[in-house]
Amino acid sequence: MHLAIAGFLHESNTFNPLRTDRAAFAAQGLAFGSALLQEWRAAHHEVGGFLESAEHLGFEPVPLVMAWATPSGPVVDAVLDEMTGVIIERLKQQRPDGLLLALHGAMVAESYPDADGEVLCRIRRAMGPGFPIVVTFDLHGNVSERVAEYCTAAVAYRTNPHVDQRECGQRAAALLVRIVHGEIRPTVALAKPPVIVNIMVHDTSQEPLKSLMDETRALEEQPGILAVSLLPGFAYSDVPQMGPAILVVTDGQPELARQTAQVLADRLWERRAQLVRQLPDAATAVTQARTAKRLPVILVDTGDNVGGGSAADGTVLLAEMLKQGATDGVVCLYDPEEAQRCAAAGISAEIRLKIGGKVDRLHGEPMAVTGRVKVLHDGTYLEPEVRHGGKRLNHMGLTALVELPGNNLLVLNSLRHPPFSLGQLTCLGIQPKQQRILVVKAAIAYKAAYAPVGGTSIEVDTPGVTAVNPERFAYRHIRRPMFPLV
Image (cartoon, rainbow, N blue to C red; front, side):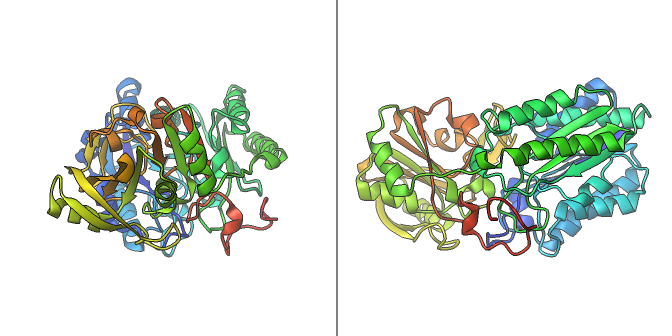
């Protein structure tokens, strides 16, 4: 048995003015053919799960392409055309028995609001109605009816932070092998309750999602049900399919799939009052951090959540920290121009910088600071542990560590980089436990890496394209009514 393996993943924030081009994928993860095996076999990612399953399920993996880019604005059409074209061309050449396809579920392209659905539609048209396609989705996918129509079966992550990605790939592979052997004939149902699940309640180890995720696992034990997935969705895409989704796969029982999906959708709707969150502003949060006893304090910059597609150069928290005289803090910013200036100045150089606020002014104004260059680094590091996102090899680009007044540390990255790993700091010689304040530009994903070293966590309502309150956004294309907007 030969099963093709491919991935094309992007979480697209339509409020971000930046477009995600081919260079963005090449900078983070773009592997064709056998290069996919080398880069992703050991990754704690669904593609790693696909490849591990080949060994114990007895199929030959046929690697096609794996493309991943840091969340940002919509993907340019040319990249969607190229990646989908590569998948289809190689499927026709190799003629495998089926396809394991890793998608995100919240990818938007310039001309395709439902880019994941478009990818599946093109593959289905090219390969015919009988070709088995099993898809994996990120828990933040905005799954559409087209997705449910064109895939043979689908499963999604069950954890946030995403620490079950490899296991998700294994579940998908097991389904595809049974399909190819003729043991099961999947039917897929989708339900989409009209509610926005605030990203700050997406921690699946806590209520209100914990018990719902437990219920999805229990439902899978029922006769005839092959897979149940609950996706809270991604609120930062202004597209018709935005919002949570329940995907149910049954063995030839479409009515059971429909009823089961609706039961979970009703459960989510019943808990809608628990799906909102109010947070302190930057001034209040920094004041709390300065007096906290359990250190280090993690300040969560929700409005500049890099893993949600933000600018990564927001200055609101740094400005407030310096204004209040906070000490021993660490802040990471995307600023390739100033990182290059630090490199030109050299180690130990005193330098005046104008940092942040360059992608847009939604995340704070540019700041003038003076500091000393402590470290220069190529920005590449390995993460051996299971972390959100599943990547082992990480790239920040040229990175400079600058010491600011008050023993505060400023990390300047040349590539937008989410705080999924402590390696972002430790590769520069920073010891997180020795700091008073650690600023993470995140929502929930940082917890897998930072929770073990953090003493106090303060989530902050900061401005930006990932702001915690959905009422800040001018949605034009989503379904209505949607709670809590209406």
